[in-house]
Length: 305
Ligand SMILES: Cc1ncc(COP(=O)(O)O)c(C=O)c1O
Image (cartoon, rainbow, N blue to C red; front, side, top):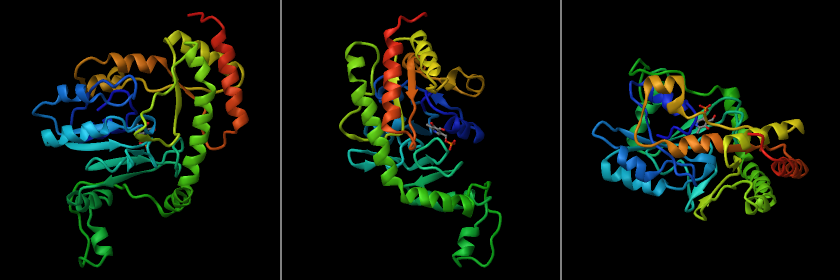
């Protein structure tokens, strides 16, 4: 799995007694580098967990082939990728399993929440039991058994009805949400082209095969000092721009519970140079233009780093 990601997937592995093995990303797609993944496979490898960073599916076809060749399970962390596609196929439908996030920062939200997508029918029955405190209550509710009992180690993973009702309304608006976010994304992208040409920053470079969902707009700066200057410059104009992720292999729990395989150079470099620009459904075109202007003004100033 990548180190350039959020902690949820790594923690899930550790909770079940596994060891997350971190592999470097491709510096263009910011997704797992399939060649580095192949080099990291050992007899102990059980699964590959990939992240579709910023809803970009680049590399998923190669990971599918790799998993088939090595008999491994493919799990997609599709937290960023609701409504996105690769070569026309929805992200989250390539691996045996995929996870979605409905955290408030995502495109489609329920406050907190998520979903497990299961593409292998053989895994469904057990997942149902695990999600419902380890019982076969779902079978009982379908009239398939007279009583429900403790079958497995589970937990309370089902969403409440209130959460589900909120989520349903969001899902019904998903196409409109994605369309608007894509508009905002494209507005940033066009407006920042001249800054890229002048060498001030790099914009996302996304292959034609990817149908993205506008979840994140990021730029890459030359170094961490330049990013700090930009964050401060934007902040001075009331604009909140953030970055992520602190590489998991370099975090306190990561050092305790996981290991790396191969170089982490791209992970470390990207994590120090990436800057996410404001992106949410309430953003107006005028606000995007204001961010771009503020960014241009700050880029024009010499970095104090
Ligand atoms: C790649 C990735 N996976 C998972 C998550 C978290 O999902 P949740 O908070 O629903 O576990 C995030 C962001 O919050 C993320 O960026």
